Length: 437
Image 1 (spheres, one colour):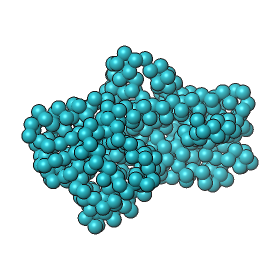
Image 2 (image 1 turned 90 degrees about the vertical axis):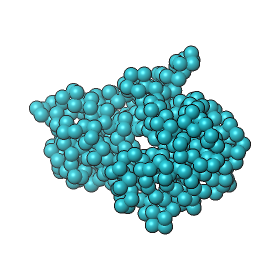
Image 3 (image 1 turned 30 degrees about the vertical axis):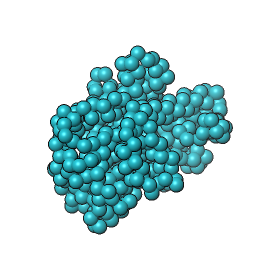
Image 4 (image 1 turned 90 degrees about the horizontal axis):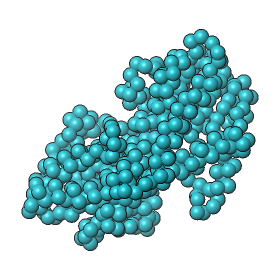
């Protein structure tokens, strides 16, 4: 199948590489010339675990190519996938549709023969109707269907999730469009449920799913706070909860709050859509507020761990919103650091194995950046672990202790083994368990 993908970000690029690996002919389209030039020269513009090998393989065999020309990517395509950003409005927090609308308007004039236009970006309910209307207006003679094709790729695991989907949701209002997409995903028909629903239901499924997972994360974080006060162990509690098949054991890991490009944006957009439709989504509203407060509380934990000395130093390990990605958008680490900066409690030095360039774009020179974990902790009075990179599980604790001025660790991802850390001579605290010393 010939496929055009508009957008080469964290959704578009892994999707394009995955579809190419399945044997399709893929052209990725992006207006940003520097991105396209880098991709043409074999350089990835995002970090995603497992992406590079498949990217190079499919570039070499000619199954995937890159262009800034909408005409080149669309005119011969059987399927055009829109995977552009839908950033939140700065005031209302609703999803901003300008990039979706611009893509729909531009692609319309290049349609030749029957084409399915699939919106893979997370978009408000009714967006498919808008896209359909825009294309009809621009090109009344076009033969096309607009479908909703929500993505369920976790950043850091996008390649794994592409080839091992839980489900594939197709929001199509015609059988013709549904049949084409079932054919595209035929390689997965024996490993995943392929669900064909109405377009508006599909658009709702994506928001409802992300909002529910956000609620689950916020709930376990609140339970972790309770466990600390009640002298219970959040992991024992979560294990007991997860054995109930009605609850399940996924998303029951306590941490500094949910973040990233999806959950904060999608919960806010879902709450906005609720208000627009006269529905009070009270649980979602409460989770949004609680999640913001949590990041403030996490900063307060770090501050409370600082010794009462002049000019204390804080070392931070982890800047991305989670391990396996370089994405710092709405990262809890960014929010926590910004709260530390606002409190003016001392110098901050940070390290992340992949996210340093993106973090610099957000924080600039407000903090210092280290070349590795050991450089980051030199002279520090508190080490705060904010992102669950696997490398951080295997730190040389003796070396860390020798480099720090005050051996204190605040582990907001619960990566380290408490007994090992305490035996190494650290004051250590983590989430959801009684504070240790």
